[in-house]
Length: 409
Image (tube, rainbow, N blue to C red):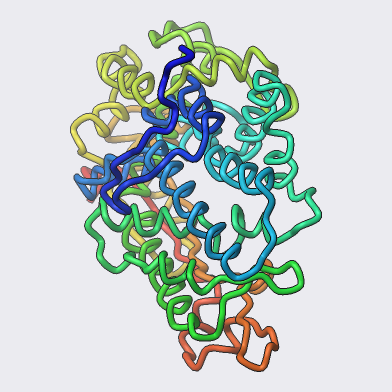
C-alpha cells in the first residue's frame, strides 16, 4: 500500500484532465462512502426523457472539486490569502458536499427516510470520516457548516454562484444535450474576487452572470422540472411509500438488506443512528431498481402497477396548469378510477397526484451575487445589469400539476 501512486488523474469529458491534489483527497475518493456515489444518478429519473443523462454524483463531485481548484488559484493570483490548510479544507468540503444523497438523488428524501435533507446526511458522513481520518476534516466541516470566520469560503461551496451550481449546470447540460444550460464556468471563475470577506464578480463578468442565471432558469424548466421527469420521480416516491406501507402491515416485501432495513423501520432526522448511517452507505440506485423489477410481479396490484410504469416507461398522464386544480375535478377523477379499477379511495391516492412546481433562478432573500464596479462599489447583480430580464428571474414562477392514469383520458 505504501507504494500506491495517489496523485491520479481523471479524464473528464467536460474539463479534460482533473488532478487529485494530495493523498488525503485520494484516500477520501477511495473510501466506500464516496465510491457509492458512482451508483447514485445525478439527474434522478431524467434519463427517461434524456437518454444520455446517466451520469452520477461521483462525476459531479470530482467536477466541483476541479472548479474549486481553479477558483483557489484565481483568488490567490489576485492576492487573496488562502493557506494550504484552508485550500485543502475547501477541496474536501466541495468534494463531499453531496455524499449524503440517496438513490436517484432526491426521491429518498420524501419516501424511505423521513424529513432528512441530503445535506444533513452529508454532514453526518463528513463527521464519521473525520473520526476515521484523525480530525483532518475538521476545518472542512467548519466551513461547510458556515462556522468559519472567512465567510467567502462558504460562498464557494454553497451560495447563488458556487462551484456546485457551476458544475451541475454545465455537466447536466452536456449529458442531457440541452444546450441552453451550457455556461462558461471558466470565465465566471476568472472574474471572481474577494472584497471585505465577500465573494464578488468583477464588473466585466456581469454578462457571464446574466447568462448563468438565464441558463439556470431554462435548465429547471427543460430538465429538472420537465413534466416527464417530475411524474417519474413522483411514481418512484409512491412505489417506495407503498412498499413501506405494505411491509409495516406485515406483508412480505423482497428487497436487498439495506433497502429492507429502511422499508421496515421508520427513521427520521432526530433518530438517525450510526447504524442507520452505515446501512444508508450501502444503499444505491441498484437496490431500488432491482427491487422495482421484482415488485412489478407483487400480489399487491397497486405496487405492481406503479413498478410496471417505471420499468416500461408507461407513466401517469401529467398536466401542467397555471392555477391550482379544482378539488371537485380531482374528486371526480378519483371516483372514475375507483369504479373502473375496483380499488379503494386510499389506493386511488397513489395514482391521482397533485402538487406544485417552483422555479426561481435568483433569490432576493438569499445572499446576493455582488458585482464589483470599477469605482470599487459593490452592487447586487440585479442593479448592475442592464437587463430587465434579471428582475423577472428573481420572481418565483409557480405552476401546478395533476397526474392520473392514461385510461381516464
